[in-house]
Image 1 (cartoon, rainbow, N blue to C red):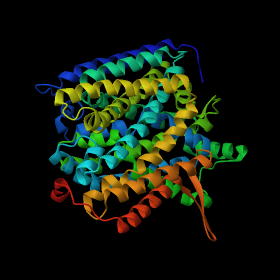
Image 2 (image 1 turned 90 degrees about the vertical axis):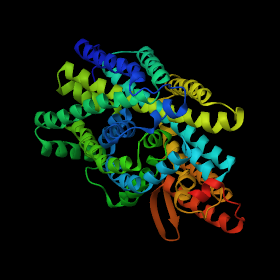
Image 3 (image 1 turned 180 degrees about the vertical axis):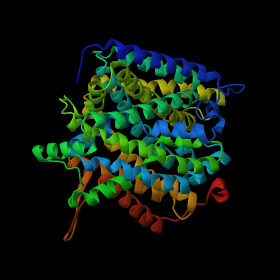
Image 4 (image 1 turned 135 degrees about the vertical axis):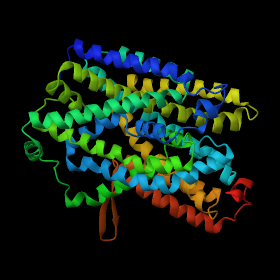
Length: 495
């Protein structure tokens, strides 16, 4: 991949980055209420987003800059196994259609801003609320760091060296998120998604023609995997269970993250969420096309220092400099939207479920908004420090654990929407065993997402997060049978 400064690419990149920066600050005036000094307005925009805005926002924070970089990189490295993201995103939308409208209604009726609010309202347990909140914040931090890794990859491809460009981009992100709240990423998401679609459509239309067609692309990838002795353009029978469980576990975890739930809670109705569950698979089509760039990297015979460089290298090698700059701007802006929403989601959790719950229970709405703004800055600083001072692999490993951890909040958040059978002590016990047991398994496997499960003569490689979730639910059911049920909260009775 080229490393010298590419002036035309830099000029185009800076133009679009400046455009979204202006939009980020202008967003504070978009659909502006009388005041932004409340968590409901700063963090959820008054729960007024309709179908199209929600579609761009949820898509924007679900399909991130790191997705654009990492999915083709994984396909380039291991082949067909890297396509697990496709069935995972196909599975997730029926779950959204069935579950999220009910979750939105409970949150709207009771003024809840976070998942931990919903859990506390349902079970009346501060300990369970804190468990869900802590998990959400911790799982989100490395996710933000990964967005900065995606942005750093695009910046490096332009020829910039050092951390200064990344710090500058972070400062801009921090300032307009502070001033505009969720309005900023929602408005920028329009530009980000359109740019990503243009870049991907151009790539799948132009690159195969320059590489001799798709037949040659697949043949070149197949030969490269055979020469390497690992990977394949077809999924191997030994990978079936691992592939399926990784897809299912990832689908169940996807909308447990604070940033995806923030997009859900900001919607104006349950019908809006259902419509989005129908429309969001359009992003899955884009993701599948994007993943093919991994195979194209082999056909282009790229010389890469890192697998993560495959997408930038393809645009640098096969497109004019100005369009490469456009694609890199799309990737960088694709980091800004989810990073902003993630920091807002984490800030909402800190404000509602730590500050208000334990530090200042009497804080008013303006005080909540002020605390959330500061917390969003702290979260971004933490993610930036991870990227600057710790190895990239550290963020990758933590993000793997983050997926496992956030999945353990599913029983506490989702089960209570449909049944009153489970108790807070049972769900808390399940969370403890699932989270720490799953972490132990991942740690003993060298922080790998898969674990060889042996039960008698049966053996299968299974996603460790799904194993932990099954144990979590089993423990919760067992404890629930032996621990007396407490008196239900008023909210629990009403829902």
